[in-house]
Length: 118
Image (tube, rainbow, N blue to C red):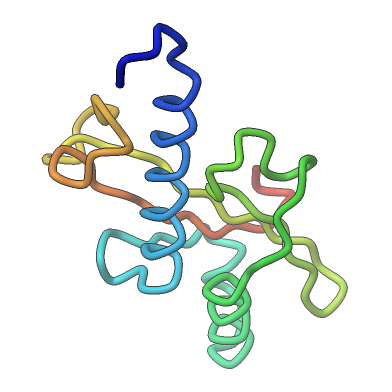
């Protein structure tokens, strides 16, 4: 890019992270998915319904997605609030990723929890 303004590069990076997060959320087996004890305690059918709500989540807005990276969401199910979030790790899941926009150096972890466990 010949422009001295780096804004398009930042937009491209955000778009890359968002695209990778959306793909991972729709197919969490591409990384790791973990649930907290409050979610684990749910009956199987409710856990499955919650997972399907996370996979199909599209209600992103400035309040839950201020950086437009699609890495967090809130879901209401059966009168209970749940959160999901995506974190970025290095290849060995030992430290944070050096570049969440680069899938070759990043492993994603999806955590699903009750809001009161956050």
